Amino acid sequence: QVGFYPQATKIAVVVNEAGASTPYTTFQLMSPDQKKVVFTGTLSEPKKNQISGKTSQFADFSAFKQKGTYVIVVPGLGHSYPVEIRPDVHRAAAIGALKGFYYQRVSAELPAKYAGKWARPAGHPDTRVLIHPSAASPGRPAGTVISSPRGWYDAGDYNKYIVNSGITVGTLLSLYEDFPGYFKSFDTNIPETGNAVPDLLDEALWNLRWMLTMQDPADGGVYHKLTNPSFDGMVMPDKAVKDRYVIQKSITATLDFAAVLAQASRVFKKYDKALPGLSDSCRTAAVKAWKWAEQNPTTIYRQNEMNTQFDPDVVTGSYEDRDASDEWVWAALELYATTKDDAYFTAAKLKPDEKLSLPSWNQVRLLGYYTLARFANELTPLGKQGNESVKKQLVAFADDLIQGTAQQAYGTVMGKSARDYIWGSSSVAANQGIALIQAYNLTKDGRYLRFALTNIDYLLGRNATGYSLLTGFGDKSVMSPHHRPSVADGIAEPVPGLLSGGPNGNAPKQDKCPGYTATSADEMLLDDSCSYASNEIAINWNAPLVYLAAAIEALQTK
Ligand code: 9MR
Image (tube, rainbow, N blue to C red; front, top):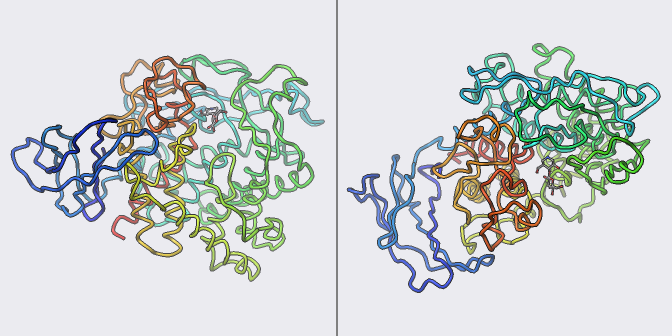
């Protein structure tokens, strides 16, 4: 729905409802007033959608490369939304998705100058946060007050979770490390715009500064989250004033913290003048967190067990993950890339035959692999040797992802299996795109880029729901995400630049929001704010979209 690059693949999809008899045959690209035909094409043979059973046909107008706005007309069926063809066509969406993080800022007033009609007072100063009994230590007994301001609201709720912040900030910092030049002029109109630091990093800093406050200075352990005991109602941030606590230190939070702070130390080294001491503080914090992890390897976060021991009960997002092996790898590799200390590389215990999985909040191994591959030329001999198999694994992983895409009903890498449609499936699509960009960076093979582009197309409308999943972008984008400010602000349009979690086969069971009509997983999205399992927004879904959209923009002529 947002558009196409002149030189790239351009596909629209015509869906035939199950059982429809004759497929359509031709299509035309016309001026928006439908008076002038600029291109005529033949629709593809019908393809069977393995998930819904429907069939679809492609209108492929890649051969048409002229800038402009058009509509696609299928005689006997109708016409599309206006279609734009031009360079830089995803730039506004990339900037908008990064700006989405500004709207999620905790402890900040958003004045109209930056936030337009979504201006709002500051919420959650978080300068009087209580140590929950589960987080008590000799230096900080239960009830101690600490200050832990800033950060981003995690999602549609108002809590702050280290695990989810970890992959989010890591993804944004990796975007910067992969394409540093691109961010010299990538402004999001935030209070920091124009300072010595790119807006991408200024935004990441808003959350990093919060993360730093989540480490117990006495022992280096990191609290799992900062939260109210239970979720707030659907009110504006400044109206949500319940007591907030930091909860139990955990191994996953502490290792994710170590990874991100090690990476931040590297990234901010070159901004030592503008941000004196920051890089060093990040490095010290990361090393300290790693040491805590070594001493407390079994401190898994288990919310229910925690609640049986301590009051008050905590029922907000748990980000529970019983397997920290991938967090160890990520932290070790980031610490290694920053310090070049072989001991960290060895601690990662890389296995050349390890089966890889797509990054998500509970699966972060690949983030470490991406970093190793990125710095291939700057590693120690030990790291260089290990990196050889990592590179092969990453390319093989990308090759697996693109298998069968051409046969897929929407021609996207996303959605070849119903298993892609989980809670937050949009982040599956975006992270697949990142894995493909990584393979492109390693091989310079343009095929990977073309496949990555199919998933941007997916997120912005070429999918079975018919929605663009990014608020404010596209002709029909989600209007009622599960997002407290968007519900409570009295403004018709949702806060822009936020990515809906997207279709989720299990959503009706999970959120029990009434009104689902879809029968297949790829369509299981309900544009209703009560559908938190299909239509919530979250920072760990936005970040890979920012990555994918900005990377595709940076590489659009390749
Ligand atoms: O993204 C999380 C998803 O993978 C889980 O299945 C789901 C249920 O545990 O929780 C999601 O994370 C939510 C978090 O717990 C609280 N803030 C909103 C998050 C997005 O829905």
